[in-house]
Image (tube, rainbow, N blue to C red; front, side, top):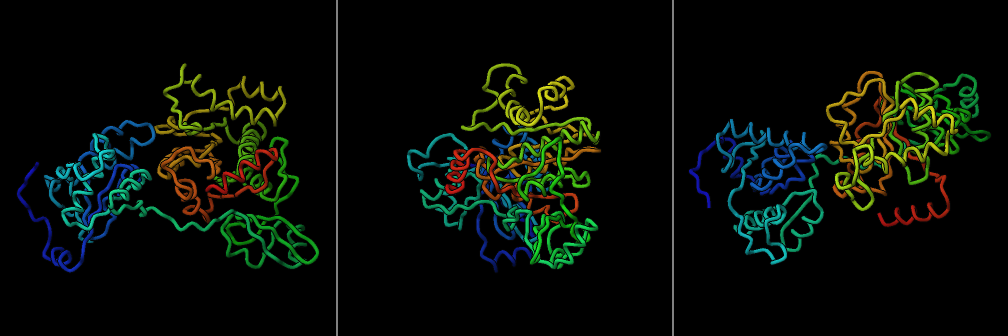
Length: 449
C-alpha cells in the first residue's frame, strides 16, 4: 500500500465549493481516454480517479496505428499535471469548476469480486478499484465505453455509465425532405435551374428536396443562399445514372467539386460504393479533377479477424478487402476500362492504418465501411485531406464490425456535427438494388438493431 502526505492545491473558494456541493467519484477506464484524451477535464466539480493500470494500458497503445495519437495525448495531459503539481497520488485541480484528479495506486484488492472477475486483466483491476472506493463510502460511478465492463459492474452492484461528453443529439437526418410548392415555382425551377422555394431556407445546405405541386413534381438541392437548384434525372457518372431520388441527389453531390465531404449512408445493396467509385472515375478519367482514387477500408473483417494474423505480404493481406472494391467495379465498367484502371494504378486500396502521417493531395478519397470507425479516427481521416482532394464516406450503421462503435457514435456523430456546413453533405439511400434475399437479410439486421 502507498501512503503520502497531503498537500493542499486548492483556493479557499474551491474548498468552500467542495463543502457545499456533494461530489461524486468517477473512475475512468482506458476506453474513455482513447475516445477523448481530454475527458479528464469534463466532469465538472466531481472527483476523477484514474486507476494506475489505465496508464499502463495507454502506454501499450502509444504506437497503435489508429489509437496511438489519442493515447499519447492523454498521457501528455497527465504529464502536464505531474509537472505542475509534482505528484498525482492525491487530488489535484483539473478544471475551473473545482474538479479533481488523482491516479489511484491503492484499492487493488479483488477479494470483493466474484472468482470469475479476479485476475490480472486490466478490466478486472479497474473494476476492483471502483468497487473498493464504493465500499469505502464514496459515491462511485465507473465510466467506460466498454459494454462488457459496464455489464460486469452491474453484476457486482456498481454504478456504471457510458461516456457522454461527446454525445450529439441524434436527429435522424437523412439528407432528404419533401416540400409542397406552387406550379409557378416549379416552372421557374425547370426554366432557370434554380428557384426560391418557401420552406427551403430552413433546411440544411445541400439537403435534397422532393418538390410537388398540384400538377407536377421536381427534385432539387438546397443551396447555401437558401434557394433550390434543380437536380436533373439524366445526370450520370461514368455512364451510371441514379435510379431513385436519393441516388440522383447523391450523384449530384458527388459530381459537385465544391462539396469537399460527401457522406452516403444506406443499407447493404443501395449503391453507396458503386456511386462513389463511378464518381471517382468520372473525376479522374473524364474531368481530370484528381490524379487518382484512394480507397481506405477499416480492417474489421466479419468476425473480427485481424489483418496481422493473415498470411502473406501487406498487398496479399489486403487482397480480400481490395477485391470487394474491384468486384463492385466489375459490374459497372467494361473489361477494357478495368484493364486501363489496373495498368495505370488509378485506384489504390489501402488499410486505414496507413492514413496517419499522410497528406492526400489531388485525390478522390473513398472511406468505405465508415460505420466501423470511431469519431476521433474519422476526424483524423478528414484532417489528412490535402490540396485538391475530396472525400466520400460510405456507411451502413446496421453492419458494424467494431464493437467499440455504437449505432449513433462515429459517422453518425460526424454527420450531426457537420450538417449544414457548406463543405459537407449527407444523403441516406433507401432502395436496395440487390436481390430479394439480400434485402430480406438486411431487413432482419435492421430489426435486430
